[in-house]
Figure 1 (tube, rainbow, N blue to C red):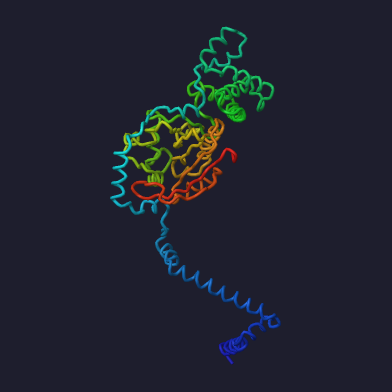
Figure 2 (figure 1 turned 90 degrees about the vertical axis):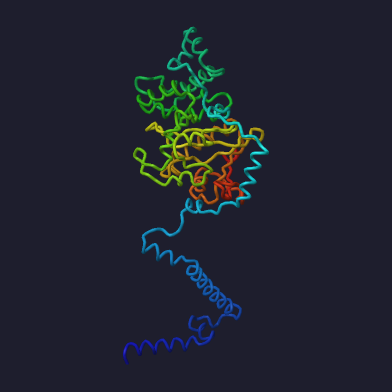
Length: 416
């Protein structure tokens, strides 16, 4: 008998043994099981077969196998990315858009906007100080020098500066900088006092220690942060970035260059929809058009900050605060607007962290983050920041004349 005949004979013997449920159970040594367990095993096998069959059917009918074949042949990913999916959404009916425009025009006047500092921005930034390099004179034994510097600092600054200086003298945050024994005391004191009286003491101590560490890494960093404090005392300083009040003249051109999608410095070109696809404005034709958008034309209950990379001293993005509800101690933060290569980066996370830390320090109880439900990258970023998802609101907004379902996230002061 040839091999094929032997194989046929063996297969026939096996199928003969499995011709009934009793024989099937006997092959696997289960013939002595109670009747209920036999039927349970049989039911499990049927469910397994149906499940596998259903999955295979869905893969075939849903086109997954075909997409895999197409991707292998073309080398391109067949599935749409979130930005492409967003741009392909159906527009609202024209009658709805006309109704929206009519209601906004007839029922409400145009909101008051400004390109300058809002009170919210002033509250969150550090105190403005014009004392310059002579700030240490606040603790000088010479009464005339102290009096001169006292007139150049905000109310309450002098007391906080002196108290913080003494605290750091007793317990510095690190080794003394060679040749500059008072560098740490001065760095800690000016950053502590610059936080103002409204921020909690815990926040001021924490912020001052980080500032002291960054400023006293070397003689070079000491010189850098002293000079920066002379010209931009209001800026919030972090480990990787610092936050400046967003100014049209200072930041608009650079922000346009980094968000336009064109090649910029060492960065390669990209599709500008990756930055602006989920926002109600942009991309922009030129910097003048960008200056007219809500980023630079802020409402009075909003704030905007430029994210400046500490090492290169270059702008890398913008972070916005909107819908300030002081009565209920609640406010909304927008996800940072940065280049695609910086989405979810440490710099973006730290920028948001500094804003949120200051918001809770001055008394806010709730920070909300509303994202397009299709924006998977920003939703991942919300998780990185520690936000908790509360709900998905269908038909929440109209963005670029199309519907947006919003995923609502929040951070509470009790969670912070």
